[in-house]
Length: 622
Image (cartoon, helix red, strand yellow):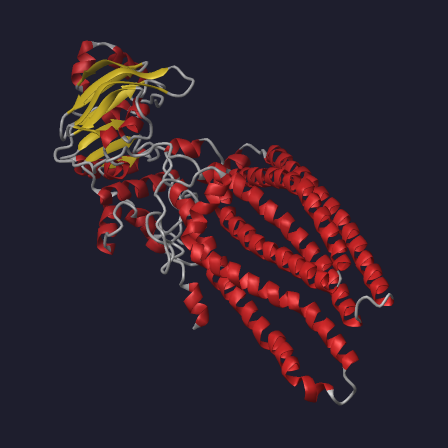
């Protein structure tokens, strides 16, 4: 019962804006965590501050009780010297019983409390909360964010941030209490017996602080460098695995070996530099502890020999010094671990504590699509560092109109659809859907109103059914089957089997759908969009991966899909666009012609030249 009470203290999947702690929760803003290290820590700690407060108190209790052990030992030695055999238990049983209770009852209860808070409440749930909210922020970044980094490195940062932040906090709390309680308790107790006994501990403490001041900043920097190299190596390895087909097709195993080897050597070098500092710290600390132990033993024996202190004080001073030496080693090890974890957290902030790359504007309203009219008003756009892709692009698409975009590679066709989906923002001009500027509406509602089938179809590493259901999560099995049938995918789906024996719609498709052919992936994607049933359709090479026979088989279904919808289509084969209501011809980001297929051929301009050159063949994508 106690386990479940603490395990349910935190909701591990509470999104920002919802209190994570069921008892003392404070919602955090939906903005990503700040990039400052302390502010990043506080962003997550504040959601479980009651738990960390309890851990602080439990750690204090354990440290106090552990600090009493040398005092109990010393007191027992004094009692033995003060009482004749046979009288100790009868005369001092209450004191002995109290000592036994402290060791047998109070300390186990304090340790249990510390573990219930640390293990049950913090280790699993707070770690999961940090990972969940980190992912929550990262996955809402714009498309451009993921184009700038390895997916594997981003995922590593998200996964490592939780345990690193948790461990650095828990270890810091424990380390602080042990040093403060042991050090302060030893100084006070020994000073009461003879002030000179406190000198070895005070000198040791001053040297210990100086050692930490020297070691900690260097260890922090080296730990951060090692964490960066670890994430880089993970990103390179995942990149190789993700593109394993390319690696095999080009026989580039040795090249990939070199690519990964470089990252591995970088990590090894950074880790070795970190380990050098840890080894140096261990050497200096062990030397410092040895001097403190010998000094305490020499001083306490001299004072006892001079008759200035009792044997019980000697029996207390030596275990205290020995315990301080042991604890200092434990604390030093934890300090190394703490700053290694802090380095990991600092490195993770580069992916997590990042302002949204494409945020919705304040007060953004959901898009309301009533007719499906789309208008590009004098839109100009250029990618970073490149020449303009679209220049004064002005296009009015009527509700239910089917428009084909035509042009050579780089003409701006795909760029126009990416701007409509708000993957990028125009440098000038605006785009309207049913009179609403898409820059002022929520991205979720905008993309929810647009169905997209692209040339490069990537499926989720899930079942066929889950991939189709992605178009409408609440769809029934009958709806999924109907969409697959419309996309001419039902027959090949029925024959699918995966390595675990799952078949049909339950079969897994592999990462990015690698277990399916290009045509099969494309038909799954078409089924997904059929199920979505959005009022606006973007078909960017929707049938490019299909052979002629399959394409002919689903053309009728595509026509049915497009009925009553506003359609923007791009295709290599101009023949697939010939039936569009209007063709818009682009050159260097500008509209140079538009009209029906027949009218453009009759005009004998740019489109007619493209048609003759292609002769029913292909044009490059743009």
